[in-house]
Figure 1 (tube, rainbow, N blue to C red):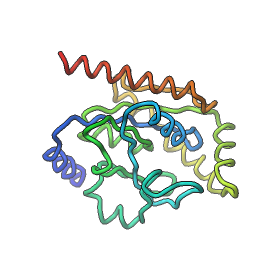
Figure 2: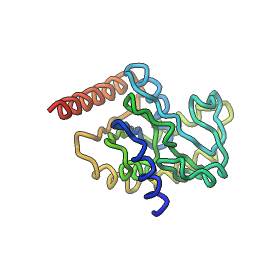
Figure 3: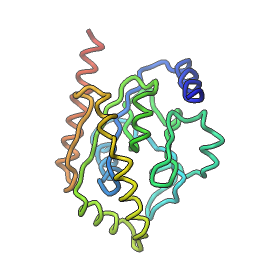
Amino acid sequence: MEILHYKQQERKENMTKMIRVYAIIGKAGSGKDYILKKVLKNIDAHGIVSCTSRPPREGEVEGKDYHFVSPEYFKNNHDKFLEYQSFNGWWYGTRYEDLSEEKINIGVFNPDGLYDLIESEVDRVHVIYLLANDKVRLIRQLQREENPDIKEIFRRYETDEADFAGIHYSLQMLPPEDRFCVDNSQNGIETVYEIVQFIKEAEKREYIKNKN
């Protein structure tokens, strides 16, 4: 906790503008990365490129999908991170330098990362919770790569059940208007449209509040 407090104080001294983050969460196969890319094509926002210690999947590009780093990088650079957590056996985290003060920020977070984000010095956090039935999630993960690691897929499934067991506690830390749950079983344009509308409405409320 002392390290986290130090990081927050360090960041506050350098912050000059309001930072707002839209956090996309969801279990493996819920379509988080796909939806993030589609939403960013339909709204003027900064896409957060987080760090991870897991190896790249087929088609993933360094600096575009993630910053692929070693576990030692997290250990030796903890003061650079707003939040970082172990999730499904790998480290994930968001560095201060990965956030924009000029635009709203949109990125993918895991449950523990979301909790730390809400507890951090970020001015406003909005949550977009993607839901999808288990069959759809499993099929997506099987189709993600040409030779999927079946054992890894089922390991992630079991880990998700534990990691998301208390997600509603984190969601309840936010006002109802700052959280949005949507069924993404179809992974379609309707989901993207609903999320874009949610973001626009939230930004409109923020603009009116600051104007007054």
